[in-house]
Image 1: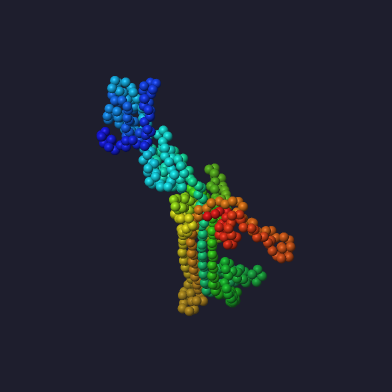
Image 2: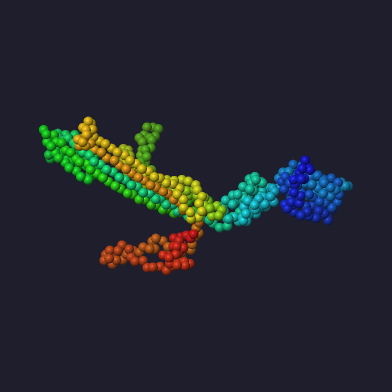
Amino acid sequence: MVCAVLLTGLPGSAMAAPPPSWQDAASGVSAGQLDVPLNKSQMLTVDQPVGRVMVGNAEVADVMPITTKSIYVLGKKIGTTSLTVFDKADHVMAVVDVAVGPDIVSLRRQIGELLPGEKIGASISNDAIVLTGVASSAPAIDRAVQLAKTYSGDKVVNMVSLGASQQVMLEVRFSEVQRDTAKKLGIGAFLNSQSGRFDGVFGNGAQLVPDKDTGVGVMQRTAVTDTFGVFRQLFNIGGVGIEGTLDALESKGLVKTLAQPTLIALSGETASFLAGGEFPIPVVQNGNSSGGAAQVTVEFKPFGVSLAFTPTVLADKVISLAVEPEVSAIDQSSSVQINGLSIPGLRTRRASTVLELHDGEAFAIAGLMQKDFGTTVRQLPILGSLPILGTLFRSTGFQRGETELVIVVIPHLVKPVKPAQISLPTDRVKDAREGDLFLMGRTDGAVPVLPAPEGATAPASDSKKAKEKRDGYEY
């Protein structure tokens, strides 16, 4: 077993300091320290022939004389012990402190091979590994710590710092287009008498309300949108009136939404913001155990444009992003009625993902293409099914909707600029004077052209760099 260890050991390892002068002139006994890597060996050489050797803790180190002047020392367990060397006359000629620790030489070699270009050093403090130096990115520090843990477990002291603070600006673009088309054509009929009102079984949201003077029904539209053309004809037969309406409606709508939130965060930190508001929602609280009445409280729900992201700058300017963008708006069409209160719904577009991009690259993280089509037919039984004439007894409509949505993220590595190079939106707006307001109808005054900011190479209209600096950051 000893022979096998000798073959795998690294005599003369750089971890061990050069042997001190083992001879103490005052006492005639040698003293010093020998550093031995864990599971590796060192050779100890003395000036006089060795009679025997003795180790204080055999679990920490194993010793064996190889020649008359050389001793083999094997590190078995992290710790310290003492080695006593006797001469042929059984006199103590050397006492050596043996320190067994992690193989720091192999760790340094692995850091150099796996993390080339990183200025990270490693040393030993007692039984822990201390990492020092400057790294180019946070992932490089994490890899070095993981390597060190393979040698000393959790006993790693990380004192490595980043070369420079890395800040990431994330630009998110919500682009959405909604198209709605609706058509309606049909006949609505109603029966009315002076003594009462009878609504027709088909129609488009109309009703008859008795006139307070004549008692004859007057039609009122209750639909959200009125028809384009309406005609009404009243027949009196025995005090009963027959009233009809022609429903002809065609509507088209186009809604375009573009939100572009921007947020900056330090690498490894989370940043978030909300540009919108909060709307109240009544919440019913249960009564107490003694049978008290339930109480209604108000809870506020946020809506608007929100963004939360956590960037991590990797090697070669690769940015890892954990991003959660969201755009929401109050939707009255999905509202519900509770105890006479109308509670609106929310129309929400949300995405959550993790991806890696280079500086300035764009990536579509979410998209939606949705098409909805629906038809509605309302008719009188039997009569509405008659050929040709059935058209007079039914109302037909259809509605079609199309939605296209794309969410794009663009990360940038940025650095701050000097305060004098930043301009605010309010700098371009000036309060109007009384003459401009009342005589010229101007709501804002003229803003003089400001000189180019210090350090800019061209005016703002000609230099993208100067514009970026005035916006508060620099790529």
